[in-house]
Length: 356
Ligand SMILES: *Cc1c(COP(=O)(O)O)cnc(C)c1O
Image 1 (cartoon, helix red, strand yellow):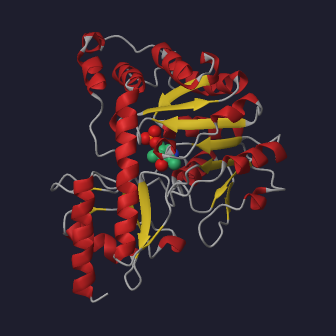
Image 2 (spheres, rainbow, N blue to C red):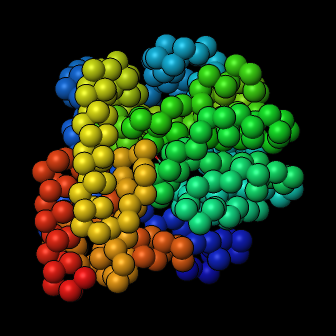
Image 3 (tube, rainbow, N blue to C red):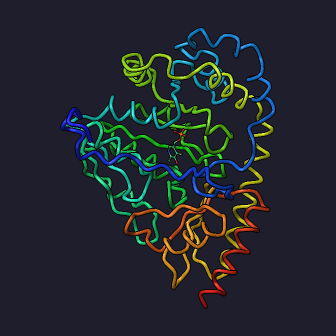
């Protein structure tokens, strides 16, 4: 830390992204990326004229992308916001709708960035306890004053919360903003999108990083009332009007339009996820009933950290999460069928070697 750092950031603990080691090639099952490449349509779009226009700023309204999202999801363009990854969209929303007096309540196990945004922005973060089986008990969000952010399916656990629970939250808390982070919605869980018609306190956040093969292009978005989208634009135009670059706008549009590829890859990941769950259970693992592109898994007798380390030595990266309640778990991204078979083979080896 230099002596110039603003004192209010001296205690800031930044988010720790999953490792992206460059030292050797790993089977990467640690950051919930897609094992499949971006659609050919994306590659074609990127090879087209845009590269010759990199001397010019991108369109600050990201008009092409906003219109494509509006069309795909049946909304008016004024109900759509786009950002440099959904992390940016979430940060803008926390900044726009929380303050010293209005904090953010989130499930205690969830996306690790939420508490970091709060700490960066000077917002109170309130973790709300989960049930022992990691499901969300919405009654624990009752009677609070904070806004609410919940990932659905939930980050880290993969568990899907029924839309009726989201509707209860919206209905019971008309003066609190409810942000539903649908980063993992492309893998079987339904979206709460249709509730936008009835509730003006709902924000849906989405990303092309997980189910549309564009983690490296950084394309995220939000759907909400026109008034809320106007507020998000106010923050964006006060911070970084060209938040989406030329290439990412085009990549996002092309990925959205290639519905067939989206459906095919999502189906493959769902099938591989269900296969992986079964095989892990056969090996004696406890596995969450995830509706996302990852599962949490734990094996009696070995800690999450040990499992993570043993797999890393053997060339497979999974995620060990520092959360106290996840000590015995690792989070495994669903890769291709071949990658999962390699993983399963190594787990069997580790089991035998450790006598478990
Ligand atoms: C991965 C993830 C994000 C961030 O996605 P980007 O669009 O890549 O910034 C947001 N929310 C959750 C729950 C995630 O898992």
